[in-house]
Amino acid sequence: MTSVLGVVLDLVLGVVLTAWVVRRDMRRLPPERLSRSWNVASFWSAVVAFGPLSIPVHFARTRRSVLGFLLGCAWALGVLFVLELVGTAVMWIGGES
Image (cartoon, rainbow, N blue to C red; front, side):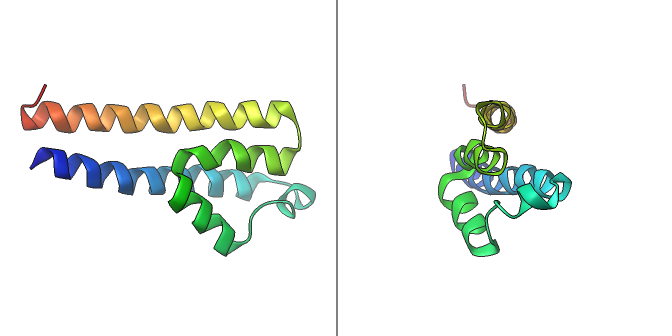
């Protein structure tokens, strides 16, 4: 049962955390960069279909630089780290090793 809970929690948190990171960044972008970001339909398609992998793409699209891509990779690694911590906690609580 904990494996099912772990998968569902991973899917939900993957979407929620990815959406939070991208939305947080979009709120802080100047209008010039914001115009290069995804529209609502593309945003949700990318977040749901690709999860944390869409974060570096968003940062590269809006900043158009290698530094922007690397910043996106750092955020994506942070999201993946949180997902791993939560997955490990769920397995530990469930008694699986």
